[in-house]
Image (cartoon, rainbow, N blue to C red; front, side, top):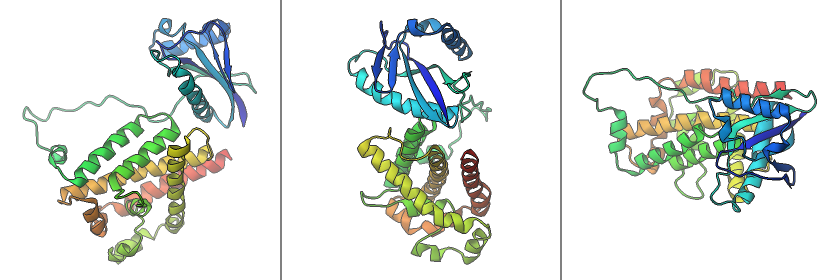
Length: 332
């Protein structure tokens, strides 16, 4: 663990401060408090991000010191700390844009090195479509948008949360949005525990309905040496995520009760879960299933519609979960 100073410039149209303010472990200060090194660094970050630094030069800086294993974790912890302070202060400036800009720095206080806010995670990219002719085809997207039943509405609500999760940088919020996508898709009532259904489409049939799945398919799934480990492990992981969701909604998400490596595992489980469950519901809609209760009734049949389930479970799901666990051990 190292000590990191994290400094971010607030978004343009935020607030200018004539003097430094301190709130618990957070410092808000004006640009005059920048060192010459920091000022030059901020300008280079803005240039690298194709931003006009003049629009941010006068905005307040927000800073804190955190202990973390790496830069990504330091940024994540700092952003949670910043968020609470900004929530409180923003009430006093209702017409100002109290958000973090992309401009900032991370300084390792042990070595003195200043780092850019590197983020190696997925970034949106331009997609180029090839022209398929002058007449637009009626495809599966048109079909889904034309459906008007309970299951199709659930699917569309789930896609909304999934899109929000995909573009969310905060790790905790990303996990929450993914979970909301699953609840919108699968949760029938307040007391409904959707963990069992999620495990089905991760490649782990469970409950009494699993007896209706082809014995040959089950045996092939079980051929992977780590299959039984994850079959036993996933229920507890999903219960932890559900607990994380409930605590976040009722008590706020900023007090991190899980290690960063655990949150990384939660996020990976959620990415895999949402995509597979949405795919299963999409298959169900295409096969004229109209409600979540009907979907549950036909789970074994919907599960077997995925002809790539063995390769997907072994080569993608178990492999990626193993990689997350392996990476966590390396860090520890």
